[in-house]
Length: 315
Image 1 (cartoon, rainbow, N blue to C red):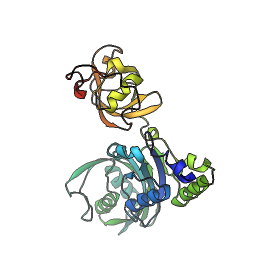
Image 2 (image 1 turned 90 degrees about the vertical axis):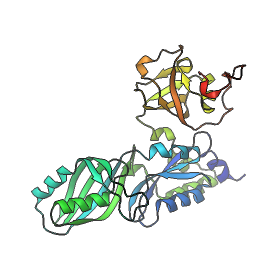
Image 3 (image 1 turned 60 degrees about the vertical axis):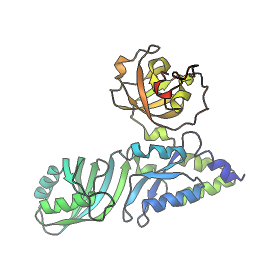
Image 4 (image 1 turned 180 degrees about the vertical axis):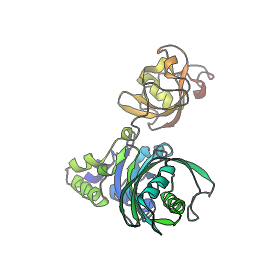
């Protein structure tokens, strides 16, 4: 096994890893993910939040078992810098008033070129501000829900101004907790891999991130290691298997931990205020698991067929 395989083999192990790429204009997000797969040698690679080929910026690449987090992480809110070109003259005051009306919940229909069904949808614009203006060119900062079409937003702002408008350029500056300053280029990633081949893993270690960074802000619940294997088999976590926890509400998504290991993500079956560690009561139902079975001791097993049913196990 060569040095590259030895170094990068650890990326996909255990709970997977994340690499933040500053996507250039031109290639699709799928192509960038394919290049990362080729550079790292990791077979399982995905990404959260597609960027169209003309769009640049933060692209969160998931490697190994972290790919299982795609369905959760793609929901993270996003931030963009957009360049809008108005097709007529509009005063600053009128433009600012129109922009103000687009803050909050808005209706959008995906463009005809979109790969998703063109059903009317509701998205929230959390923040929308004009950063600069040069005649009919307007620089906007947009903080919004995932799945917001900035091209449509620019078009609608132009219509509301009474002159029309379209998006000229777009860059994603944040995805969830990750900012553009956290990203590396594909060239930097390749250079780091080449250095790792020679035995210097310093640069690569700085690029590779833990999935826990992407789950920042999500409540955590720490379980006993004796309960971890049952969770990996799909069992629900009970108060008996809990050591400590953050505050959360019923139906919240919670991060399930065993020591420093990320076991997976689950849905809360009760509020944290009702938990009594050591007592009966199902607390979390796993939604996705990142660890293999057999890593932790299987002390949860019982002797009757009924008690061995994982869906009824109380860990």
